[in-house]
Length: 266
Length: 266
DNA sequence: GGTCGCGTTGACCGTCTGGTCAAAATTCAC
DNA sequence: GTGAATTTTGACCAGACGGTCAACGCGACC
Image 1: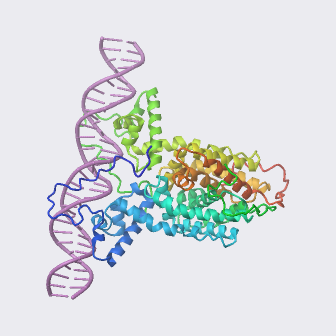
Image 2: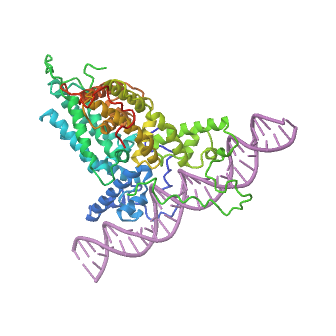
């Protein structure tokens, strides 16, 4: 299976230069910009409608996936006609791009806040708590990203290999530092981060299953409390340094080996 | 957002009883069975082609999601024409159903093997190991189920509320028994199971992200070794009973409570 | 070697869907 | 108020997609 973007014969862009009498040459020939972006200045209406569209797209994409969502659905939910929607975003793909980009930053905020200065255990506990709150309060975002990545992240590889990777590596180094200092058990920080993502986002991404198995109604949040308790126990006890932990006094315990997470590993 | 199955205006089944001269009354009027199922006996060819179709569907559904997959794609991958495919499964939806049902059992096998008789820590470690191996060796299945559940599990609610729930509750009771016996830290067993699912399946479902962040090429499995080490540490240390754990001396604190099926459970 | 049920297919159909276009409606600065 | 710029829309389009149908193999058994 190829994976890749949406891979498929490709809808073959309708012969853009359709033979229909092209009265006046289009301003920018084949401009890939939506008409709205070609105005003198960014208007209030533009900002508002773009916001409405992205909000609607979040709803629809997160519920049905990119391919499963239709422009009509998004347009309706945004309270406008499809051609109008396409006045602001020339292609469905552009909506996806804009949506992902606009949400990614906020999504990574909790990890960004993980501070080398704080107490390791407290920092990790806070990170878990915040991630879990995000699953509870913003499940659509979680599912949106999950869906994207599951399809091979066609529209996100750049973000992942760029900002995300940089951030994750930075924080992995922080965690490694804590381990060297004997503040936490020496574990592979990358896999620790994955585990925190997986366990917390699980409650948003697989919400329907969680609720079915726990007998929680769709309008209750009760189980998040238990989840928080469990996860805090698991990670804090799982990461607590051994009682006899020795702060690794390596000769010039300088900058740790570059990532890979494999210290004495592999 | 409604969620539900694929929710949407519904493709309005093409007027089945199209006015085209209906020469002879159809055998079963409006039979919902594929033609292949109406033969006297199940032939070798039937078994073979159904297998091919389900194999192809697993590839395609897991890569593009149900809505994203097309019958043409599945047919091509199964090495047959679309009408031929529809000779074996009358509707796309039927393929989904058959596929999910045929895979669910094997998917739950590792949990089924979690035995009340074994040593708790060893049992849990084995479960994690097997789940991780499944992510590595059968990522398509993982993504297939993940995609289904993320969309609200339209075609799986029965399975989830039925077999899965029964199994999970049975095993939760086993874990509860271990906790009562002081063999593991007293934790919410449901959330423990979720955490194991989440952390292990993460490596299949979010494979593309994991590889990008870890710099692992698509044809390498190396990182699964580190993942296994990390997860084993996390869960075993996280669940290890406190040193001063007292085995909850119930009346006749004999051999660990039978467990097996749900004891005091619904 | 005929025949009868199983298996396969090319040609189609109706609908959906992403996207276009020309023109009408609205807004806004002056 | 008015004219230019911006916004909105109804009517369309072409390709994709799920599904149907009549008819044509085909092979196994007599």
